[in-house]
Length: 75
Image (cartoon, helix red, strand yellow):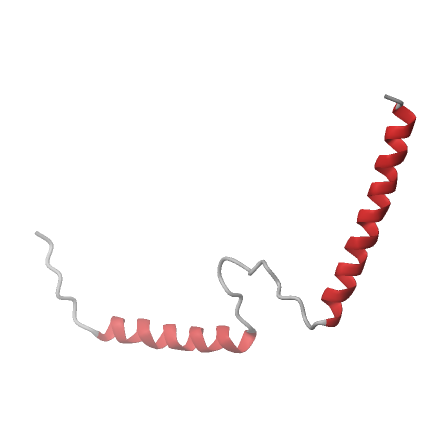
């Protein structure tokens, strides 16, 4: 088997596949937006307004906790 001939055939096949891939990508772009396969994982980051709301809510929570009488007994 001629090695140079095999390499030439593989390169021709590679070019053909690259053209086909480019055509498919072009078709995919014209059909509409491509859905993003990866979603962000983990916690959602908060904006300044959301942080301020949480801060106010927690301050009220801890203030109400401080006002309650302590029901726990040390046994």
